[in-house]
Length: 120
Image 1 (tube, helix red, strand yellow):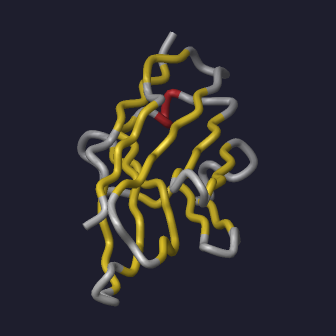
Image 2 (cartoon, rainbow, N blue to C red; image 1 turned 180 degrees about the horizontal axis):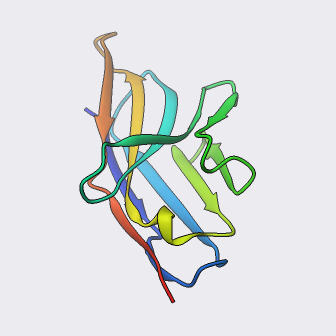
């Protein structure tokens, strides 16, 4: 089982930046697609960005051009650089990892989430 721990959330003013990190731990054969989701109060969870094991990226329409996802395979960590933040970006940001465990099972894990609040 992979454990995911997010960090880097906080309070930032509109127009500011934050960098989120999500570190994976546990024995795996491979880490596949890593992704960031977010969930605001009263709203459905939405995909923010994803990155495959080959570093192909995809972004939600609302964050294109402002957010950048990247990964460091050696550190088993995925990052989300968030620039030009808006109040509507306020949400709990959750990390998700697809992976193959030592039994060759294809699984998925979620982190606990980190709060991002954009407010003046």
